Length: 314
Length: 218
Image 1: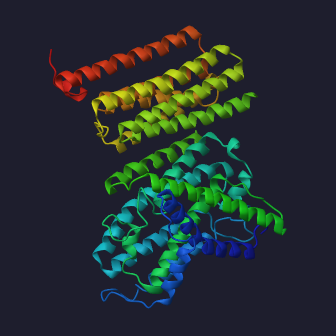
Image 2: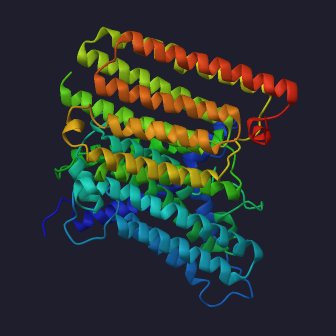
Image 3: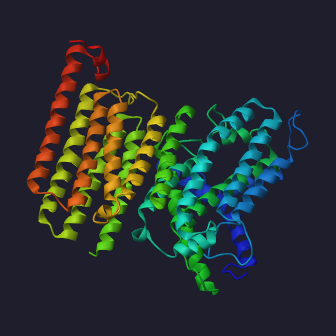
């Protein structure tokens, strides 16, 4: 098979995503703090938290089964594997068979499922509640994400993200189709839900009854909690990478020289930064929705995605 | 501007119009619906300006200016004023759940696209997707009017519906005669004024809302 992205590049991209994930979270936290006129923790704080957690010992609930300690590892593995499917520094199909966007969404939902199973396994009340809520929101988010992917994939004729982004080339906002606007609008609505942020979930609290994702992490401790946190950082940057691959594939398509790779990497960084600013702004300007209002909020995204798909097909 | 560029721009504006319409349908608070309808009118004005540069029809410039002034600024401001006067901060009251309304809106959009594909040669003469988008906007506006209890939200639905008709007329005919467009806009202003006065009067004298009127017997 011929392709633009050799194995080494794909692996390097995957590692890069995992390493940069906490940085994005830190940057969003910092921006939120500045918007609230606070000094805020340093941008590198998530790394420090992770280092601290990995040094600590583990405490486990008596009711937890032997499967419980495996959960964080599996979640992290599924999320990191999803990271391999996102084109970062270069567009174009990979040189070897690799999963497509559906695989990516499948891996992310596998991670979500495992997190919920882990939370139920430990037997804590908060964990069970968080899991049930997360599983209520997930079926509303995932089909819509798939529809957004399909609405762009219909044009390119492939669901492989690298090829899809490569086919769209370096088209910029002016080249956007009518359906792209609606698809992007749907994506902007979904992004806070998929990354577990306000108005759907609040990432800053694990002391409230409103928590979704944090509630599921309560029973984990030490390295396990570190794995779960790293997985959620990675999930966030993978989702942002998916958005930028679908809608802003403005990066060099070919060329093996370092200059092209550097340009691609900086373009990717810029795109992620813009989306992170968007997330920080949304988080600072909206209140968290009541759980029963979330379906209505996500319904807007669903309708936008469906109309985008309709515009493409009809 | 080339014909394809105009088609593309009108298509894009059409999709943004649909997006604002979805926001109006989904709005849980009256303020959001008002802002969305103001944005929609702004987009209509932009579409008029685009068509004006494309066709060289100077009437369309006037229409764009009037739309911008009246529909995007004055009418939302009046609605805003009424909301403040009535001191309603409460949420939009829907007859059927808002999620169900959203689903109906999807059906409307898909059906209007499906129907207008069958028009074939007629559709070729029309700029881009303007016809299905216009039909969808009009029908969804009617849907909003039919499924809301409070008069203010029904007014928002009426404006959205009117926007749809305006958009269709503009794109299909490449600009109607100026006098007709001005007449239409005057109608809208008049309707808004009458409804505003009615809403305020009904509220101040009997403290009832439109939903209560169905028990009124002559």
